Length: 158
Image 1 (cartoon, rainbow, N blue to C red):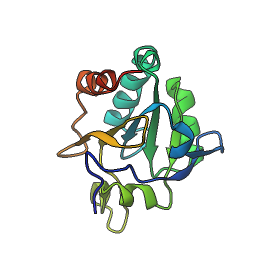
Image 2 (image 1 turned 180 degrees about the vertical axis):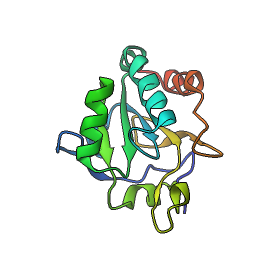
Image 3 (image 1 turned 120 degrees about the horizontal axis):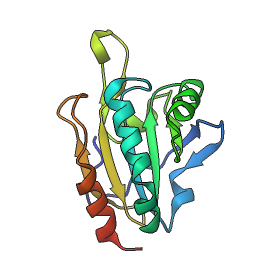
Image 4 (image 1 turned 45 degrees about the vertical axis):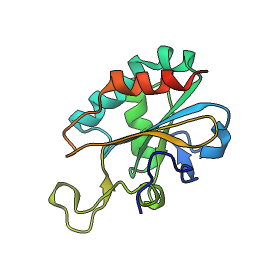
């Protein structure tokens, strides 16, 4: 079952690219942007994560915590973060529990039978942990509307 607008966001505990443990509940009292992406070092994913990087000042001023989430291992995510000077945590959902909980699992990614990645998707979660905005790309090559994501976060207030 997919996570939907108006519902409590599914909780998670994932490793970040620095091997630290991150829980959604740790961000209580902040607005959260969960940016799911299919894979580190792919063209559109690099563009997407760098677009969020370039908006971090604005998002931080809105009391927002951004997390990039993929099924990549923390080692790949660390190299990806370092290569692109990312200024927010990348979370490794290597067990695919979170992509399944949010309903954004992408089976047989890139024609690889049995390999499940993540859809490109963005969830905006308010300070109380309720999903206020959801966008799932029609295919992995479609980027989110970054201005709309920023508007959604701004509408939640600080």
